[in-house]
Length: 80
Image (tube, rainbow, N blue to C red):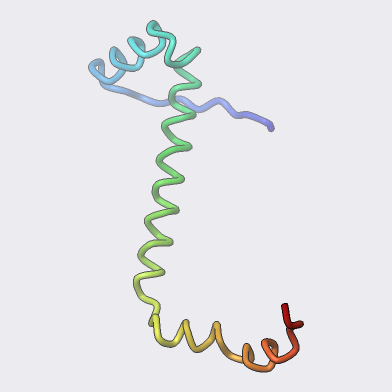
């Protein structure tokens, strides 16, 4: 995957913590640590949006939609 350079500004405290993680070999570089942090934050934001969208669903309606036409299909299923 192609990569692009991005310049960011961090306060000294945050940079020191980042450097400490690199020294402890939690990450191989500052760049890897920042990439992981951004990836994790984006995933968390996506999960949050999905949870909010799911919260707006009407469970009874969703159940009816899921079962719609199911009776006809069940009749066609083989006996076991």
